[in-house]
View (tube, rainbow, N blue to C red):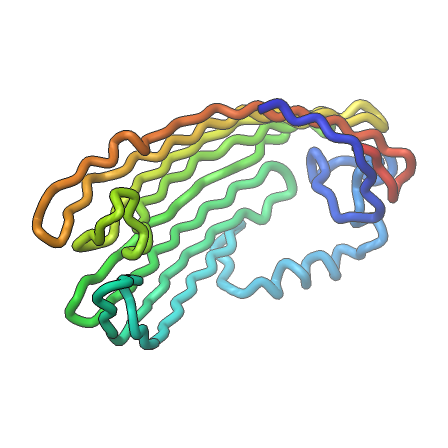
Length: 231
């Protein structure tokens, strides 16, 4: 899909093409009235630990709940205690130029003795500043997820949640010409569904739900002033 929009941004925080750009000539910079100390404090308030020029932020959430119909069944509702453990790791750079970010998310849900699902979602993305007016960004992502057990496209309850793998990648650019900034991106995504098994043990293929897509985005911004831009 090709995206072309027209609108206005008033005093919104925006990303400069390069952090090292001269604030006096960068009409798209929105932090010119913020001191270096204030920007550093805002970054430090994010938590985690510094490892050289990288910030590492681990996180673990534990929850216990209860469901009176964990399979969302209309004919045979079953109750269960629900245990959840969500582990997450975020890594981000703190460089004067360029940028690198990565995240790993592993949520686990256990319905007591019924079944347990563990998903895996990760992504890596970065930005390379060629100079003060041109930057290139790219990223990749992968997910191994579980659909809710109550969702069954075949109209019958599955023995365990359906698994799906999704992958994505993108590459784009941003180029600034004084008050004009243009950017573009090409993205690719794909979903691959695994086989499901009914309560009676019958194996069901869901290959017809596999899908892939390619997207194209294009955007232009014009800085009317240092606080207002049309896009």
